[in-house]
Image (cartoon, rainbow, N blue to C red; front, side):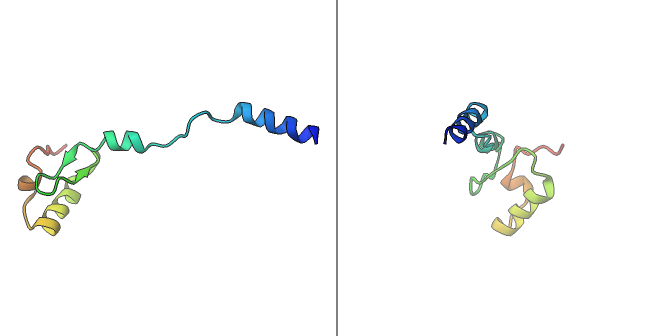
Length: 72
C-alpha cells in the first residue's frame, strides 16, 4: 500500500535522469576513414587492424586506404 508507494517515490528521486550511453561519444571519436570505402574507425584503432582492412577488403596498402594515418 502506502509504504510501497513511498518507496517507489524515493527510488524515483535518486534515479539517473539521463542514460549513460556512450554511443554519441564513440561516433565523435571515429576520425580515421578509409578513402576507398569511407568506413570509419575509432581514433584508438592500431595500425595492424587498418592494414588488415586495407589488404582484406581492397587488396591495397595502408597508405592507399588511409593516407592521413600517422603511426603513433
